[in-house]
Image (cartoon, rainbow, N blue to C red; front, side, top):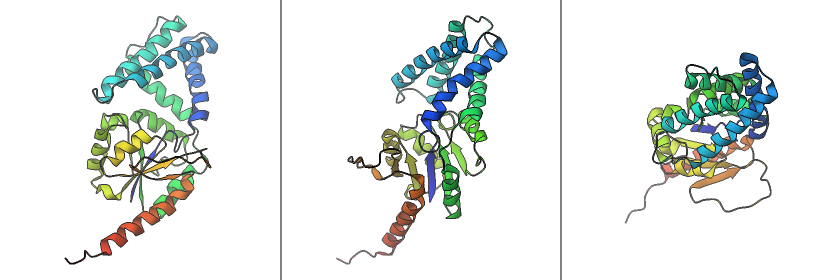
Length: 256
């Protein structure tokens, strides 16, 4: 099987990383441009809140990924410097933003315990494993620098590589063309139902990871095949899928 694991929420602990991300960015900016870390942190936090709001408001169905993200990434840096009262803005704001993001992620990305082992067990079982993320390539590679399994993935698919948002059908259609594999052999594992729905729309088997939701029952979308509470359960689920597909190929149609 071809298994696509989401970065944020499936492999990376969002809460731990979020808490450290802005502090690390502020520390880097203070060391390069002077001023106190608290000043930069206040400025970055303010710009980051605006960034997140605009990201949520973006109409991904009408705009390419780069059109939205390039503009927002530039504004994040410009607003940060503006609030911090620093006039010496980097000449190439966009490149600076991407490099800063890569550097911060390589320092703060907190992978869930067991994530590395889960990826390796999938490989040992003969599956191909890919990283799939809404973020940019530089963001994903920065995060993997922090991990102990940067070379364990057969490929990285990102918002930038697909030039599309992950909750759009286009993202997954492009992924499917890249791996050159039938959709029936592809599994997407995510903690976001909108992204899973998009993956299922091109034939992927969609698996919802619900960390911290143990004991809470809710009706799954018809497009979602199953839900898990841990990546440790994924190899067994894939075995069941593989066996089921193999069995269905053995069944002969009844004669009419």
